[in-house]
Length: 236
Image (tube, rainbow, N blue to C red; front, side, top):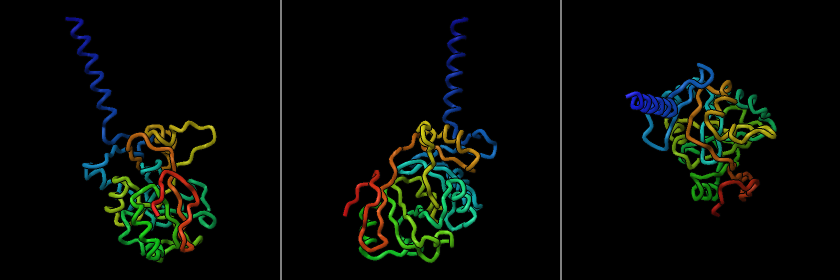
């Protein structure tokens, strides 16, 4: 009887541990930070609605993409964009900013794109690319200092669905990794929460993230030029 009791106790402990690891929303290190588990499809609409609400309020989220984990905000809310720039040490007068769009249907609102460039993007997106284009009229002033913007349409359904629900692009930049630091701090959700929990309002747990950045394609001069070869291989 005692042996059976011990077996039952061990079984209950394992069940409890499994439940804790799979719980959909947990508080991570800071009671104001939520770690939300999302999947490629069939996510809880309440989880998605909460993320969209945070973005609409000018909040910051960390999320997986088809390349690496990134940090971002509502791209049309300038103060939120400024927070991201400060966090990454980005001077928008010297560095291009990038946005994630749901698709290419309204890309002309955010960037100037000619027919050839549009066709090139359509052949390669969704995908692991950042296309550098001349800035459009709808983006905040902070984007226009460089007069260029990076456009991403990741091959990752979750973040694109959030863009669709938000009805706006998301400013995006990869999480920073210091020299000599363990790569798991930008690939493992729990460690991401440990390191960056104070910077974000929500962290989306999409499992272990990638380590290869997007391929950057400059299209500002008409001809497409690959300025960084990353995960994506361009179909011209």
